[in-house]
Image 1 (spheres, one colour):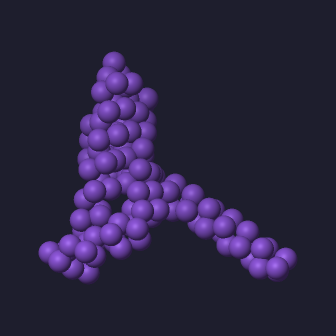
Image 2: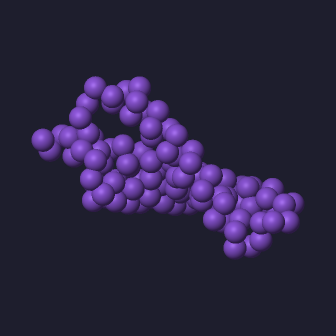
Image 3: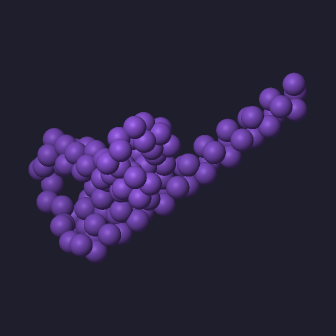
Length: 114
């Protein structure tokens, strides 16, 4: 029984991780690109980008569930989804901080050498 909850949390962790990473790593580029569309202003662009990230994450998470987890009985419960999305988001933020700090150290070392 507990493993069914864990599978549900895993699926939503994947969703939260994907959504957060798409937003973190592609938000600036998409924001710049979307400036050319006059119907999207400073408030609606992030909403649209969040929608794109959520749609893509839902697509991938649903694909994984359909093709790899279809034979497993995952528990569908709002609290399980909530916890999974939060775990995925926290993992994405931690990964971003590690990558960001690594890139900053690399940049600082290059500046010191030059």
